Amino acid sequence: MKTYEVFLKKPGKAPYEHAGSMEAPDDELAVILARETYARRAEGEHMWLVARDDIVDVDPGLIEPNTDRPHRSNDGSVVAERRRRHRAATGDESA
Amino acid sequence: MSDALREYVLAFADDELVMGHRHSEWLGIAPFLEEDLAYASIAQDELGHARALYGLLGDEVDVLAFRRPPGEYRSCRLVELPCVEWESSLARHFLYDLAERVRWESLATSSHPALAGIAAKAAREEEYHARHVTAMVRRMLTGTDESRRRVLAALEELAPVARGLFEPAPGAGSLVADGVVGRGPAEEESAWRLGVSGELAAAGAAVDFEGPGDPGAGRRGVRSEHFADLFATMTSVLALDPEAAW
Image 1 (tube, each protein chain N blue to C red):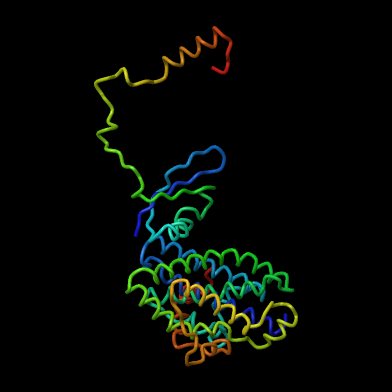
Image 2: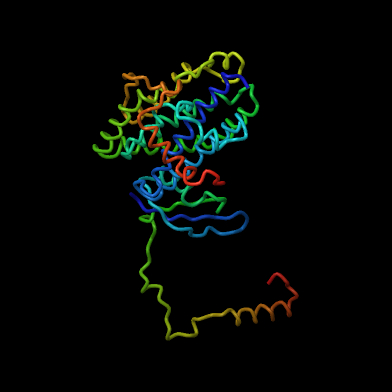
């Protein structure tokens, strides 16, 4: 049996979201069984199945934040202020 | 409604009712969770077909489904078998659903509008059932030596029994003449055998349909030795509370 990760997408601009995982013997049966397992009640308009073995799993140590470097934490306020000044100066509302 | 049409609808509905019940027996004990859900869903679909067909015969669907004397049921032997081994249940699901697809196809252009309507809705669900079971059987046939051996043995045992699905109900010929059913049981059986053989051939397998016994006796009211237990379970809620509503 293979483990698959299931992603569902609602209509419109909604992104694909992880719905859960499931087991199936192969891709063909995964598609068939996913319908009953995850999409019986219009949970989504599109579905992706990804074999878990195909996922690149990143070492948590690599993505651990550097707590000793607070300047890397960005709440966006500096850039927002800069965009505000730019709009005021140029009248460019798209900025 | 003519007696012939009533017999035809009863036979189909009783097959669906009993098949749905047998499938539901796997709830919670199918080999893996995802298959468990698929089986339960297919069981519900079959019961839904039974309800729609009984609905053509009158408003008292529950009475038709649960309160007739055993001799008045028309289900065939295949659906009444317990099939307690998984491969056996899967082989029956395969033989049954390929046959069911053929039976709905025969009603697609029925001159009886309500029947044609039920067939159109059922055919869509049936596509899923057939796709599910053919993929699963193919997987078993191309899996391990053991999975191939077990599913083939089950198919060998059940294919002759499954012929009973095409036992004509009394008056079947008149239904074809009136355009209610697109083709008769013999023609349906040929189409079914072709479908089953084709699917098996794709996995380098074959099955012999000929066998002893009278698999269609159920159409004449003869119940198999398994029916009493099945019926007791199926009607157990009703036995506890005859006024129960659901």
